[in-house]
Length: 178
Image (tube, rainbow, N blue to C red; front, side, top):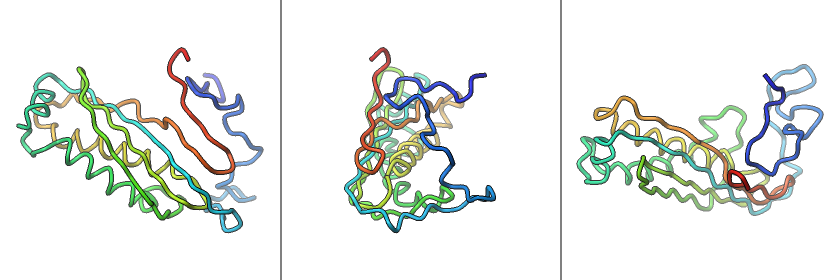
């Protein structure tokens, strides 16, 4: 196994950790929240995605609006919005952020559902975790609402697509082969 693991399809530097020490550990190795009080507030945005692969039966129920629990895509979008607002309660050491906007979009593809979540803030730290949480919980909601029709549902490709703002600068995931 390679260490550090290779990073695929991204424009990150070769050193994926980018620092000599991990910021969430103190000198004794104990977990701690990073102090961002000296950082300037700046506009930040992040977009993440998730995909859900469904059986033909579950896919048909989503498309026709006949899923047992109701409108799957509307529930997924709402769940993603609500989850982004709760990120600091779910992820240890994650800062609570004043979100100025969250958008969760769903699109139906031939093999399943694609979710794209964008979170925006003006704060001292990034908003990537909120976008990732929104996409993930929206995907879990699709699973929950269609699991009675299909136990083989696959949630995959949960990943950050891009982020802007902050000390580390902008990031955009490159397309495969790009």
